[in-house]
Length: 382
Image (cartoon, rainbow, N blue to C red):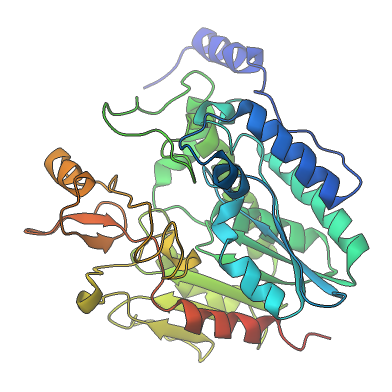
């Protein structure tokens, strides 16, 4: 469809006339001050989803895990689009056990309610990463970055710009989406706040994350993805990297990541953990470590985008966790049955199989092994 010049101008003016939603306070001198002020701000602006406001606030605000003794290395962990600092509630303590000072950030527009992503820009996210990395750099001698999904894009971009970053931990990195039309969302966001209206009877957010994201959120995700791709295409990243990806990720083009890993991430210490079955046919180096994501004895059909982050013992998302995500691309009848406690299988979003109801897989059966690989990647860096 060809748009008239007059309509284009009108749409651009509409986009420019929007003001950003409220953004958490920033510019603090210490992480403690940042954590305190952000928590207070989230408490004032959040649409709470549970009666346990303390736990909900902790999940949705910046956290810190300190090792025994005085740390000389630190890692800043960045969550994904529509997600929260609680994404690292299992990974953070594991890294702290190995002597790292671990901190998380809250990206603007998140932690409160989905509509707060309207008007937020990728530069707002970059600003928080820049500020907190500067603070972390003052507090420890060596700095690393880690990220989940969109957060991984921000980590890649920052690491290319700051050569003192020792390496990266990238979980389900959103370097390339599996939906080409995401590239159109910056234009669509100029005149349409939501790609689709929330479905009646389905939650728009839960205590731990958003379940729907406005168009602008996808637009800013695309901008981070484009920036990360541009950096990687300029020259390889030669410092240690751990990448964790799943073959059946419903969000990302992980096959592209697998195909380009050896060319784009060249450090001998780097590792790509690939959850998939059967083994990919690509010519892979011994730096690619493969585990199956089909575990029928555990009612697991496939791993999901988010499952790589959480331990089976996680009290919220683990095997016996309190939060089962039934919003998983099933029929309305299967969704209702899942909500009512029916027996389910677990998968990525959208998988349908006759005779099975699929909830989202929210934990990683290989989590302990993954931690051992992660610690090998970050160990013994000069």
